[in-house]
Amino acid sequence: MDMATERVIGMRIKYLVLNMTAVMLLISGCAQPEINSTSNTSAVTEIQNQSYDVAQEQGRHIEKDLKMKDSDIKVNAQVIVTADQVQQGKLELVNPSLKEIENLFEIKYPLEKTDNGYESFTENNYQGFHVDEDNTFYYENSYVSTGHLDAETVGSENFTDQEQDVMDQYAESASECLEALGASVEIQSQDLEKSGEYYTGEIMYYETIEGVPLIESINGQKAFMETHIEMTSLGVETLQMNGGLWQVKEADPVNVLSVDQLLEIVSKAAEEGTISVWPDTEIDKIQLVYYLDSRSGDFYPVWCLIQDIDGMEQIEVCVHAVTGDVVY
View 1 (cartoon, rainbow, N blue to C red):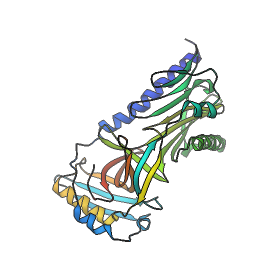
View 2 (view 1 turned 90 degrees about the horizontal axis):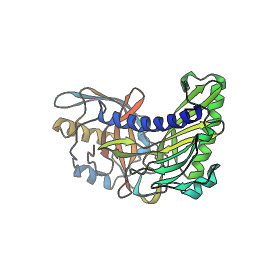
View 3 (view 1 turned 30 degrees about the horizontal axis):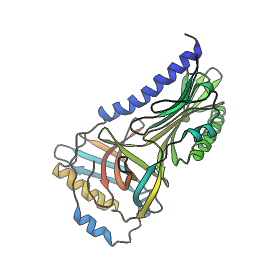
View 4 (view 1 turned 180 degrees about the vertical axis):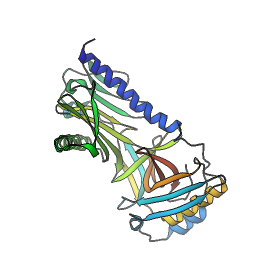
């Protein structure tokens, strides 16, 4: 087997590992038991006529212990609100088409239709894209790969000046690509793979709607929708949009619960045992995000209580920010 073929196989394995890692995080120690939805009609009535500006919650620091039957939820969290105006409504799936891919990327050989996408496969290289059953869009072009064998991963906190310059160039090119596709994203992490004198940039984003992160349900767990890009000096090597690319179809502004109201609801649910988290869970962030029901396209605001686990954000509790229902 030659090195080029090994690179193609390596990228395939990496794609599978990325998806398996996300699944394992959700079904391992990070996972939670099923949670019953809890209605809070009094909270709904209270917010219908209020002129509360949720933006004032941005940057608040909350320290509080929420009592559960068997343990506590320890809250030591910063509040994050990025919405200029909170909305709910419908999104539509707008994954890239064959024409858009051909216009955006240099196509080495004609792409042939497959069951779920288009591809060309030579003896040593692959180029193409497909859409999974969960709407995840995946593009790959091994022609621009500069190698992953024996690569050393360098995190952004350890970049040299030269490596930072390389990543800045990659990030700019990646942003131009995503903008051309109409994607709205927010950078979460940047790493470099160093293989000899060559670098591959790995950038992870949260998918957003007007600056507000999107979450979805994966195997019954709520998780952020992520976009991953691998860049080399020759172009985009891989592009993966978990859950697909979505844009607003219709939306209306809504009033939402305050953080204090949220904590009252969570505290009551914790005492009653209608939410379930692992003992002594520590909440690092309280964030207003949008939840997407990919079956209907409906989206609405939710307050999320989030725990940081080795650099990965795990949603522990999720409350509908309009109705006050505990949805997770």
